[in-house]
Picture 1 (cartoon, rainbow, N blue to C red):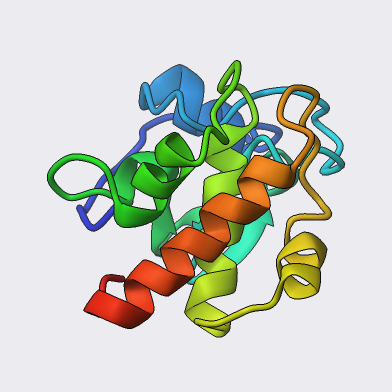
Picture 2 (cartoon, one colour):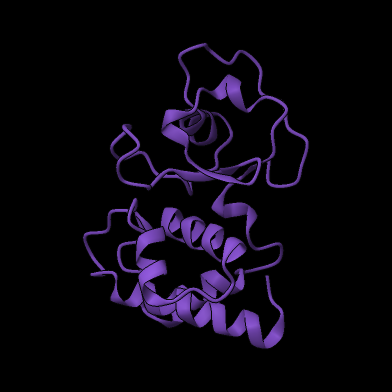
Length: 152
C-alpha cells in the first residue's frame, strides 16, 4: 500500500477495496460516491492500472501494489497535486483525488497529451464544481512542468 507492506485481517468476501481503504486503513482520499464505477471518485492504481476501488473486491488486491492519492507525494504535494491547486482545479475537493489519479495515470502513459486526450482520460470522473476547464489546465501545467524539470 503506497510503497509499504501492509496486512489487513478479517477481510470479508463482499468487502470492496474502497471500504477496506477508507473504513479499515483510514485512507480517506478515495471517496465513496456511486459505488458503481461511474464517477471516478474512488480511483486508485492497482498494480499500475487505474481502477475504481468500489468495483474491486478487497481480496483481489492481496499481493498487489495499491497506490492511493495519499501515496503520490512522498514529502508534501506531488507536482500534479500542486498544479491542481495552482490552476484552481480544487473546489469542494470531493472528486479531486480521483481526478488526480486519473491525470497521473494519463501522464505516465502520455507525458505530453493534448487537451482532447486529457478530456478523454478524465471522462470517467464526474465533477460538479470545476467545470473541468481548470482541471484540464492543471494537467497541462503538470505535463509542461514535468517536461521542463523531469518531475514525475
